Length: 427
Image 1 (tube, helix red, strand yellow):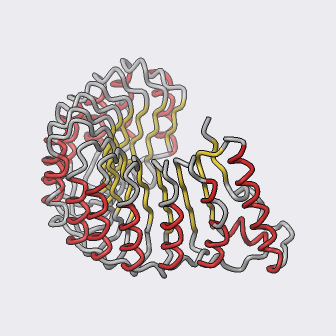
Image 2 (spheres, helix red, strand yellow):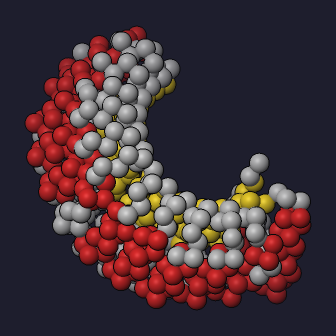
Image 3 (cartoon, rainbow, N blue to C red):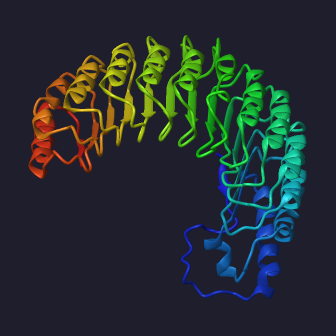
């Protein structure tokens, strides 16, 4: 049985009495001895290092620096041959630099059985392209890696050069099954994204692709143009997660995504989030073409919040695609602040779902859609009668000015009468 080992429990309260800084080394030595003993007992296969304020401030540590990272790692890798999962988490409070990243890499390379690495160092502004180059070179020496999770969100000194190095490393990791990348930096452009996509293209055994590039104002539809080549004709891909919220991406970008999704019949989970992007009805028509007849999809999540140019026409395209997803278990649609959508569109959605008899969870968000009225909710629940597997149903109608408290109550009561769902939320 694999056990996760953390340095200290993350549940410690902030107000516990603090120790003085000069006791830190004693604490670290105790932690290191703890790891050595666990290894002797054959319990350790997953190693988790948490460098966050709620833990280390209790010890009187004012700042986690590269020196303290080294102290933590000393002695651990001497007995780490059985570690196959490594997770390092640092919050905004930790000051990890390129040197600290290098120390992590040098110790990770010694873990000969390593199959999963998770490096979450968000908002560490001391990490630069040089540190990412070092990390990428180390990745090339970890041929057994099957899962890689990188979260460098808010590390604003990273540029496209980092993605060139990372792309080269990804190409060499032929055993990779799962890739999760979260890089949200103001200096990343289409060139960096294109390099990452090229790196993924060669990994033919990928089962999961997750790309999160929120609020990257220099990433446009041009950066997504190669994604269709990276996705096309994959037979093992099961999950895809694309998050480009608040990037200047338009309908052409969705067309590239759609062409990539088309005919990937192994897909089971699709998560697409383009909140605040320059999407119109044409973009939704592209997405619907990519979704049609993907009969293996069990979970679908589409987020087009604040895409204010979307109208009934675009939503109609999505509903036509939904009717073809016969294996769907879960669906989540977010059209918050798409103010051109009205009550008739709600009815179109319910009608498109009524034939999907395997549905267990439905989540709909139409907050701030001011054209939806109490009257349009009256017939909304009728189409869910035949969804015998439905257990969860959530409808969010916050700040819909024409919907009253009574209208929401009536909808809740009708859903309770007409559905099998035990968990019904109307807000």
